[in-house]
Image (cartoon, rainbow, N blue to C red; front, side, top):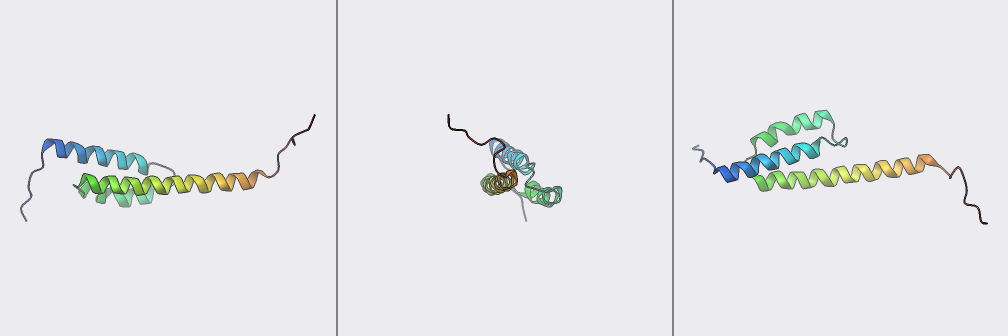
Length: 87
């Protein structure tokens, strides 16, 4: 298979998309093992649009993780320490 060189502008887009995806994957929703597993796919991908689709999916997953964390914390809090008093 003959590989075609990509233009500098396209290479810049791919590089930027990879960097953005890696930043999103640094979220606590993703374990180090998952990041390590994703790295070969990220490095091998030369399609900026695909990398951005993966980034969108990762953002959605991290937002769902945060929502679940907030819901769990709200359940753990219990009733307010100081009820609202009517004056």
